[in-house]
Length: 124
Image (cartoon, rainbow, N blue to C red; front, side, top):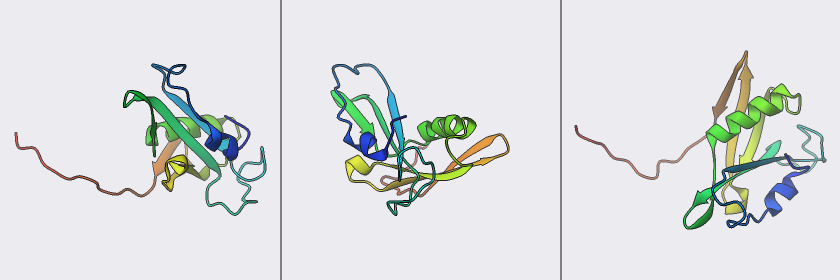
């Protein structure tokens, strides 16, 4: 976890150094260290980025539900996030991904909107 969304967005991963690693980073939006603050008017409390090896170097995932679920489990469990929040992901890629997180009992729920890019069927 970095100190701010701006730090998360300024990352420029080096594929040679990070070769073979899957990396996820998160940082709060608003005032540094204040979870849920919307001082900058942003609709998300956290900025998330996910890097992984691919495309002959380091690739970035515009929205990663499984990473956000793991981050939520950690952030909420550690008292660093409220039990319901929105994370932004894909900003550095020019995408406006929004991941809606809620904890209900012991369960973490991940939601949001999606766009169908390809459709098909398989006949067995």
